[in-house]
Structure formats: C-alpha cells, structure tokens
Length: 242
Image 1 (tube, rainbow, N blue to C red):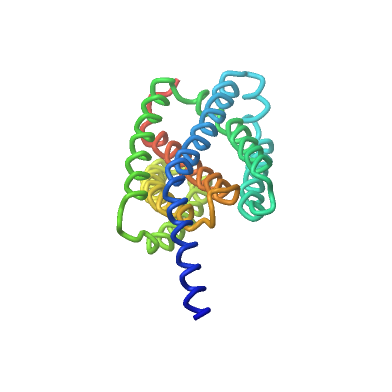
Image 2: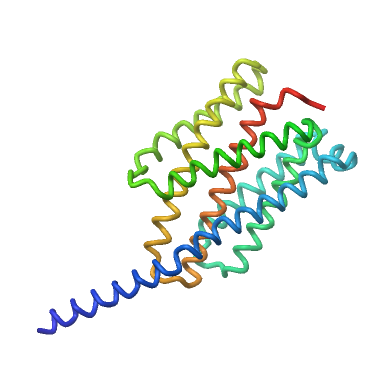
C-alpha cells in the first residue's frame, strides 16, 4: 500500500514538474538567444573598434604573441565555464561569458581592417539566415541528431589539423576546401547544439538557477557556432577587400 502511495506521489510530482517546465521552457529558450545576441553585439562592437584603431592593430595583429595569448585565455574561459558552471553563481558565469565575448572581439578586429563593410554585412546576414534555419531545424525536428556528434567532432578535429597544416602550405585551393568544410561542420553543429539545449532544458529539475545555467552554456555553444560559421563564410565570400 505504501509502495502504491509512493508511486502515486512520485508520478504526481513528476507531472507537476513537467507542467512547470513546459510553462517556463519558452522563457528559458528566449534567454539562450538573448544571451547569445548580447555576446555577439559585444564582440561586434569591440571588433569594430579594434579594427579601426591603428594603435590596436599595431599592438594586436602585427605580431603573433598577443593573439596567441588572447586565444589561450579564450580557451581557458570556455573550459572554466564548462567544468565549473555548477559551482559558479549565475552572475559570475554571465560575467565570464561577457569577458569571453569581449576578448573574442579583440581577436576578431582584423576582420574590419581586412574586409569591406559591405562584405562583412552581407556575410553576417547570410550567416544569420543559415544559423537561424539550422537552429530551428535542430529545435523542432523529431529525428535524434545524437549520431551526428561523433562525426562532427571528428571532422572538427580534422579541420583544425588541416588549418594548422595550411599555415605552412599557404595553398589557396586548400584554404577554399577548408572553408567549405568549416561551413558544413558548423552548420551541422548549430542544429545539433540547438537540439541538445532543448533536451537539457526539458530535463532540468526545475526552472531555477540550474536551468538558467544550462541556458547560459547553451548560448555559449550557439555563440561559438555562429562566430565560426561567420568566419568560414567570410573566407569564402570575402573577395572584395579594402
């Protein structure tokens, strides 16, 4: 009798939780994209300022040291957020995300120095359209995209290795191939990440800070997908330079 009562209590509790999560789920998903948009805006503003500042161009881009250090800091922030998110407060995690977006803006300032505003704008809108379509597909499709993970991450590792090799080869054809593959990889990762974020939010125990941290990490993943998709598309479309 106690077992039946406990089962009934657990079922009622799970049903109540499911109803609560279905009610707040749209709000949590909006937070994912609000945080991502905020980070993109911060990155864009700082990149524009860096790319139009002769002093910063001289300091950041004339030598490999500053960019290498900034890259290591970015990797460290992503690792720190991913591994310590449960121990950080939501405010602290958000500040780390903002810091990452700002530093990434400094590392991407060269874009505004190397490409025309028209090319950057065109590439941005193409990226936004592609990203939006794939995120929608990932969030709404009934098909489980889990199997894509292994393929996409192996392809990503290959892409990184190919990019390092081409630093020495300096082959334009190889660079074109790398850019095409990069677009395909981050298009796929956008759909996969969108589905994972939806699944993780629906599995959250409640709509409190833990769920919001999941949303913040999701926005970081989508932010990285957008930035990388934009860069690889810019390499393909950015023939009209200043």
